[in-house]
Length: 349
Image (cartoon, rainbow, N blue to C red; front, side, top):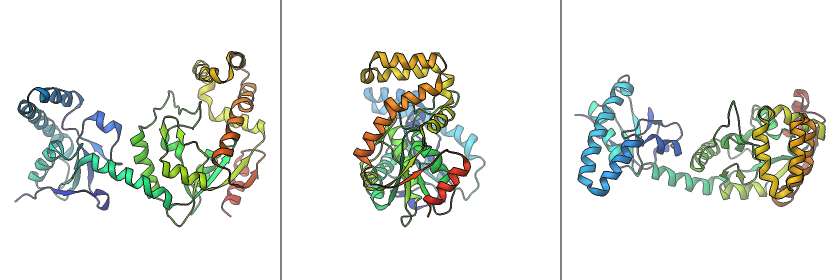
């Protein structure tokens, strides 16, 4: 006799062959359990269609939905599940543990696989994320790495994370943003940030990987990185942490930034459009000065002036406001590999 599906409200305590999100692609794109794959039983348009019919007749909606689900499940059985062996044990979930996840679970269990359904669906997982992010950040100890824009904080922390027993929380990597007006990540084009829910899922996954007995290094970010916000519990803990400040000469900072942001040099019109956002703060004349430097290809002069006029004063204000416990200052003359290695030796002492 085929096994019946089992149900759980704590899937993070078990191990599964796969985690299957059967929601529509649009729902899946907004957030999912880390590591989940999307095998929708209703695609975006089908879900909208069934929802529209439901407002007129729940019975007709269920009938139409059943036909669509059966058709999609057939394709998944052929395209995805055909290669699975008899020991395959997936976790299946939908929005709230209703008909969509139970439909897939019933079919898979009839094949003979042991299937677990997340009771309450994604909503159960999301409640777990919120609960954990309210508690877990306070259980860890942090050390803040601060320094003016262009001191290579992110690069230094990335190198530090490669050393034994060093834990680094790279918030900019999780947020796909470098945390400033010009900090949008690029490859050949802008990379979109995760949704707030996706960011929180990734953040929780990272926090849960840390050893509570070791300190966690984190950069002196704002509580908002691009369009995503840090959980209040983490932000409050960061503001209470001790800080190590990196100091680097202005010219070295300029050269580092030019190397780190080549996409802005290659796309001056996009850069100028972003600078327009500063017009209410600095006025038309200052924006025109920066645009003239850009148009003339005087990149070092532009970056230097932008640092001295905008970034450095803003940084000083934020440090005095949010990260006042600077307990150590380390001076660098350059950001060469050798200089960074020496710095890492000091940081890990």
